Image: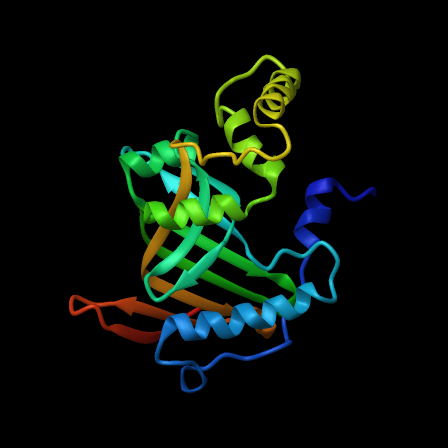
Length: 223
């Protein structure tokens, strides 16, 4: 009897065995632990074509709890939080304006690892957004102006016409200003979980949680 698509999907599985993770081995500081894992993920990028170590899922929700998720790119982090850039008027920007509680997920399947972050999104300082925008490729700068993110449009030609008009306006040398509707968010974490795949689905999960004194506690979670 021919196997159905659902049966094929149900049969997909992989036994993780590359690494282990224990509380005794992690840093007391979750940002230093993330830095270590991120640098290891970057090493994978050098050998695996098309891998983006800074790709992360951003989950937002409306005030009444309707969720939405998409992939965005990490563009910086320090002990204040994790930074990404986008159009403030798009779906995620609207969600964040109404409900700043968000979650991030990094998945580095080559390392059999995930990092899950919960926190609040806040606008980064204007100077940071300006500096990053100025460093973007010129056509990416134009794209931030050309696209009315998340709005319904009749066809792709609208975007291309917008780009042509902007190209005519700014030419090849005129500096392109950052749109006021575009810039960075910083996700300020209250919890950061590190997940390492293990055999028999008995995965390692170590979570850092910020307490009332802004100190981090470290605990192991059952998979």
